[in-house]
Amino acid sequence: MSRASVRKNVLETNRYLNEKDKSSQSFLSRHLKKIYPIGLNRSNSSLSLSSLSLSLSLSQNSNDSSLTEPTSPLDHKISLALRLIRPPERRSGVTAPFPRNVRSAQNLNIQPGSPTPSDGGELRRCNWITKSSDEVYVSFHDECWGVPVYDDRQLFELLAMSGMLMDYNWTEILKRKQLYREAFAEFDPNSVAKMGDAEVEEISSNKAMMLAESRVRCIIDNAKCILKVAGEFGSFSNYMWSYVNHKPTINRFKHPRNVPLRTPKAEVISKDLQRRGFRFVGPVIVYSFMQAAGLTIDHLVDCYRYDECTNLAERPWRHI
Image (cartoon, rainbow, N blue to C red):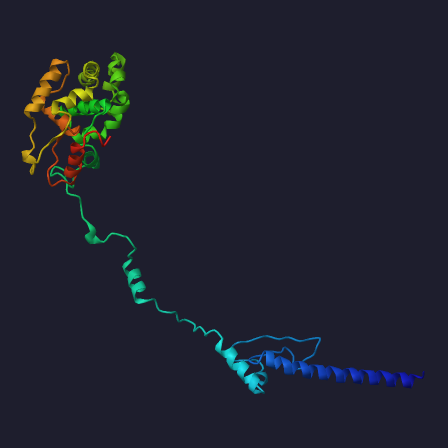
């Protein structure tokens, strides 16, 4: 075959391929317009099978406006349908307003179940509890004073601290209560009764507790007496509660001046304790002990603790 004939065959082959490529482009363009009627972006002006870049845009602005115009009723319907399902545009800098009730709740910082200022105020306590009262004294009033006690250790502790009222007030005593518990073996009568001169000197020399040697020996002697009473009555608790028929005496005092410092019952108990060898157990100390141990309820009637302690007094032993 000559060179001229070979060249002619090559030209005819190229012409055939070019015509076939153009027909393919035309066919693809017509169908792409029906699939993407709202926007068809092309990276090149000439669309070819080897390099084709399509991008779908749901906005009204398109890089190729010639493809956004429908060419048939079907194209028009498809275009309208796509516009209906298009999500709404979000405007920059504009946020949806809060509902009225949500906004007001946020401004007031109100949370569900949170108390309002009208839900309650300060608790009403006995008049001797004031704003200047020490926290330890207030806690003693709110949690211990007037609550019936039936445990021998607790009764021994309250009796010992009541005896210290000759030298100190309740606030000073309560602040050192933990020191006393550590020094006197948690007020276990059996352990305290065994203390000797070495323990007496160690405790009395401790400046933090501020207990004289006579006071320390008094507590030890009273522990020995408690053991004797427990041997006779089964427990020191049984002995003490027998004086009130095992039920607290409930008083209804309205004013602090009505609360006595001593009562005939306290005088009877004091005399019997002294007869049994107890020390520092005068009628005033005994009545203070009875108030603290709940043998008598002396909370003022308008104190919030009055009803609580009265309920415990009317149901003896049930609160233990």
